[in-house]
Length: 114
Image (tube, rainbow, N blue to C red; front, side, top):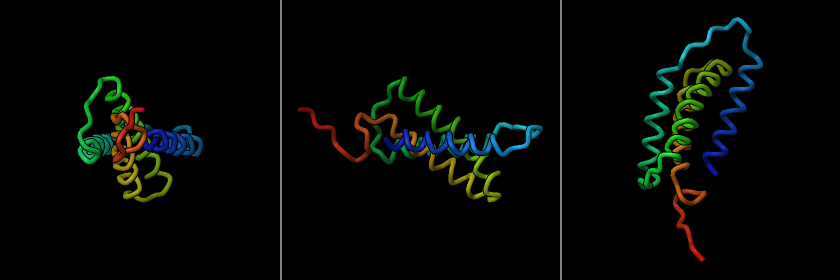
C-alpha cells in the first residue's frame, strides 16, 4: 500500500511538471537522483527486515523506486526551486518502493493465515 501511494504521488508530480514545463526544455537523465533512490531502496529493504527477493517484485521495486523516483525528484526540484525537495523525493520514493518486496500490504505486520 505504501509503494502504491508513493508511485501515484510520483506520477502526479511528474505529470504536473510536464504540464508546466516549456516545450523546448531539455531533458537530461537525473543520475545523482537515481543513485540516491537506489540507495534508499536498499536502505528501505534493510529497514523492513530483508524480505525474500522475487525477481518480479524486484523489477517492480526498481521501476517505481529508481526510475519513477528519480524523474519525480527532478520534477520536484524544478517545481519547487529547492534542491532539498529533489533529494527528499528521491529518497522517499526509493525507500517506499522497497515495500513492493513484502508479502503483506504494510511493513512491520505479520501476515495471518486463516
